[in-house]
Length: 495
Image (cartoon, rainbow, N blue to C red; front, side):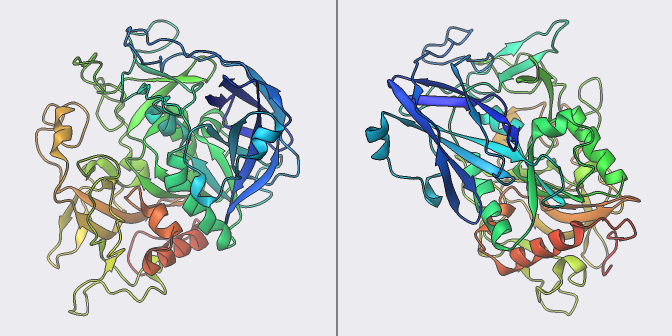
């Protein structure tokens, strides 16, 4: 058995990557790959002496479960990243055995990204912005929230959602569920959302640089060299500093494309030298909810929440969206978004109709599982022509233009058992704000433009080129927003 994690999920080209590995093999080595138009093998480390270290026990004494709340302190090995490696997301594959045994292990291919004995990391350029003006943010905090610390043949089921650890807090850290980012667990989300979209970006020739949530949290100047920030896939957990830095970016004329959903739902607080975080959520410990109301919900007002609705930034919120029942990714509708404002630049070259010609409106992404697994929406009403318009009552900017909408039916009502945390839960909001709907749209401030796809699987449908309309819309958004243009007004149709 072999498993591990990295010191930090990003490293500057030419810098040192710290790998923490536990194995019962006498020796091991690490194979390195870069995600691009295809998975490219770049080389292999020297042989390292293997050391086995058992995971820390769960503090609640749950048999078979490791602690998700503490640093596992696995043995550390250093690898210097070659300075010629270009910016990107990289995969480290841990391979057991001596040279002969390792040589019998085949190289990974495009279909082998997901699995155990793997870890990913970002390589950043020494001169930010040198390679491209688009910055792709890998949602690493969300990855850690869902990481169960499982291994090959070992189901530890220890995460924020499985056997979480709740602490009352003290002078050094706030109250909430605690998660260490120094735990193994393999690769899942990268294979589903990021890999196909990154491959598509490179096939299309987009010049992109990469960062992690922690990079954005720590560096208030991180976004300055870039014109467009990409949030991709499932981007649920944000720190206040992340939020502040993106708000500043938009106000200064920078653009954001949220090709994601369930975005900025819970606030996190970094601890332990930024190797762990705490979030006061509504996840139960055993059969008990440790603290209600959960105070790290972004949209709810203080003292029972943060009081900064996420849709004030993104335009949309999981509060007015939803998800589907069953295991991830669950059953999915295939109808796609009903189109509005087909004359908008977002739809240029798609040939899609919005129904204003008397014929039925086209469905963007129809026939694909574009909607969900989780999706975000804006509170809206229908005008006299049956066009959905954002009401703004939930914090969405008044200029937010709804370009596509899908009424969610059915919605997983089981989540109402999280009575303090999801949607129009009666304890927080007695009146329903709006019909729940996946909502695609955008708005422009006096500074930059913000586009919201409103669904987590937008990058999957685009990256795998499952729908020509989704691909063209994505290209239109990237081409337009990868250059700052503070005079662009996107708050009305046809601009």
